[in-house]
Length: 140
Image 1: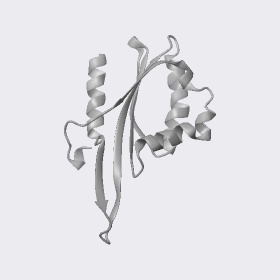
Image 2: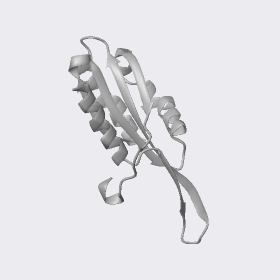
Image 3: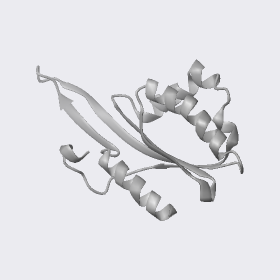
């Protein structure tokens, strides 16, 4: 089951145009800043008995704040058999993802999460996803 979820998530990530950097031009011919697109997979093992509580708090805080800041979260799921929570986060813009991530963690809203779902994370296994194929625009 976990393998199936992993393959599904990887398919979603590839379809999100993972970790590409491309230049764009404006009508005047001057080069615009490159657009950075990044997709990260986050896999958390949650304290035993806290998966539902974590999920509810995550949706109300992390999901709400990150999407408000322009990040996209195309997939999130609980894995009850292993007490894990898995999600994808994508970003596309002119700033490096690390800068956007730091702005999120430094935001006043993030510092005031109540309850803060981070307190129930027993293990965090973040992964940067790298595409193996480039899908046509209509498929993304």
